Each structure stands twice: as structure tokens, then as C-alpha cells.
Image (cartoon, rainbow, N blue to C red):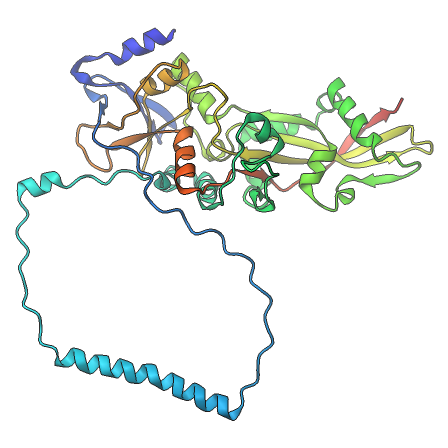
Amino acid sequence: MGLSQHFSDTAVSNNKIPYYMANRLLWKWARCEGIEGCEIVRETKLSMDQAPPPLPAPPEPARRSVKRLTHKDRVNKSLDDLLPVAEALARFKKWLDTPDAPKHSEPAPTAEREKKQAIAPLDIQEIPGAMRKLSMPVSARLMERWFAGALNYSPTDKDEALCINQDGQPYPADMYDMRSIKLEWILNYPRAKAQYLALQQRQRLTTPRAVEALRKCLSRVRTPDATIDALSLCNGNLVELHNRFQFQFAGVESTFDQKLDEFILKRLTNSGIPDDLTGALGSFNIYAAVAYAEFNREARRATVTSIYLYVRDNYTFSDKSDNQSQYLGHWNHKRVVLVPAAGAAGIASLPWLDYPVVVEGKRSRDNIYYPVRNKSFREWQQRHRRGGDFIIFSDYRCVTLPQPIEIVFS
């Protein structure tokens, strides 16, 4: 079905627009249309006014040696301690002697005043709270880390691939997160475990491209009649291991926005709603790197006996060059809904003004949803000069290969 059909779907009576609400019981999107559709709200917008969280505290300085107090020091300290007490007693006596101020009754609220009381808009930093209510705690923690980080982003796709930031410098060390994501948590999701197991299959590890990558990385460390531990050669640094000895990977599903594109374009009404794994990592790769390899006496042959498996992923809000900013749904402080018209307009690069929508007719903080795109986070980032894109590494597992891989050097 084409995009024109999607836009015709939105032209319904009563100025109502179709939208999808998450059905948590069935774990599917439920379509709401006709008189149950949503309406555009033009007088409010997503807020970015809330101040950023404080930057992470720097490491505590080394403790200094404790100076021994002399008798004179103790006397002076006692006098210093008594002075605030005397001042507090003086303030208390003044308060007792002061007569009570006359009470003024507050005017009763009028209908006009109540009407003027605006509904507080959603602030973008409230989205992690909504994620927690949607059973996405890991996703929420990662987004909060992004908000709390120092300014860090890659201006181009090429820079992002090389982990080069806006200053033309490599990402700082604190923009590598080695603790938030555990492989055990990832493997609780069947789709991730299936790819984890598939990556260990010999046919996957011995494709022509994988063998050539192995030959290239092992040729740099050829040592006659020796066994190498790749992680030890990298001083236990998983980032360095990835850069020097990674040779194969397996992808896990598509991103949230790719799923959303597919959903909007193909109307997959039976598709499931995103879970915490999708919210945290989107599409991601499980990587294989050399763990142990043995070289023969002439170092003309290497035998890879085991591999390290781990996850690496970029946490970023980048859009592909020359594309409309990706639609990430309409959010409030509790839930998320999808408005296909907004998403489809972005996919087709058609002009669509991003407005909040109200569901179930009643305008309240619980029923107004605000459109969020990747550019929303970039706008917040530029306004506050905060928000740090970062690289996620999970922990790793060493897997012994049932059939070692033989590599011959020319």
C-alpha cells in the first residue's frame, strides 16, 4: 500500500486522526480511529526548559594528612562553634517578639482563572520516566546517562563510525560505557540469543570475509611456536580488542525507527510493541574477536581455538544525511502513541507540521502526547550544550570452538 493511501486514511470525519495505542496486555498496537481518533493540539509544544542534570562528580582527591590540634586550636574552635548558637538564639528571640502579620484571605478561583491555567507541557527529560512505566528501565537509564553527559556528538556519519566528536577529537574515555549492559541480560531475549548461538557456528565464522579478517589481524602478531591471548595483548582493554581482533558479527533485529517505518508503510497491525532491549539498543551487533590462537613453528599457520563474544553499540540520536529527522512516536509522561500521518510524512520527506495530539477527547496532562524526533534531542543538546553520545560495550564471554579455525599465511 502506498503513502497516498496512508494519508487518505487520516482524512476521516470529525477531524479525528487515526493513531495506535500500546496494548500492554496483548503486547500489540491497538488502532484507534473514527470517533476514537486523536485531535491536533496547536497551542502547546514539547518543552526543553528543564535544566540538565548535574555533570557526574569528578574523582575524589586523595585524602590529606590530618593536622593535630593544639590547645589553642581547640579553644578557638570552641569559640567559633558558640558564635552560631548565640546568633540563632538572637534570631529566635526576635521572632518571638514580632507580632503576627494580618492574614489575607485568598480570592475564590473564578471560572476565568481556571480556564487560563495552562496544562504543563511535557519536558523532553520526562521521557525516561515514561519508559519506566512502560517496563523499559534499562532504556530509561541509558537516556538519563545521555542527558547527564557532557556535550559530545559526531557531526557526520563518517565521524560517528570513527568515534570523532564535534571538536574533531576521539570520544573521551568517559563516553565509553562498559557497565550498563550485561550479556546475560541481552541473552534473556530469545531473538538475541538466537543470533548469539548462530555466531558460534563454523559456517558463520569461516566465511571468506571472516577468514580474510582473521588473516589480517593475526598477521600483525605472528610469533613462531607461540600461543597468544589477544585480550592480554590489548592490556585487558575491550575497546582495543575490538579495534585489533574483531573479525565477525551477527546483527539483532532492526531499530525502533526502522520497525516504525515498516509498521507505517505495511500496516503490520499484528506487530509487537518495542521492549526494553529495543529501547536500549535498537538494532545492534554481537561481535566475535580472537581470544586464543596458536602459531606453528614457522608462524606460517595459526589455529584459532577460542573467541570472545560481546556487544558494542552507539547510543546516539543521529539522522542519516539529507533525510527527514526520524519520528520516534508521540510521548507523554506515562505512555507513547504512534500517529502514522506524522511518521509517514517524515518517511516520504513531505512537509508535516509536528503538533501534539489529544486522545480520548479530554485535554489533560495524561491525554496530550507530544511528537518526538531525533532532532528533538539535538535541539536540546544545542540549547543546553549538554548531552553526550556514547559507545556501549557489554561484558564478554570466552567460547572454546569445537572445531578450531585454521589460518594459512601466504
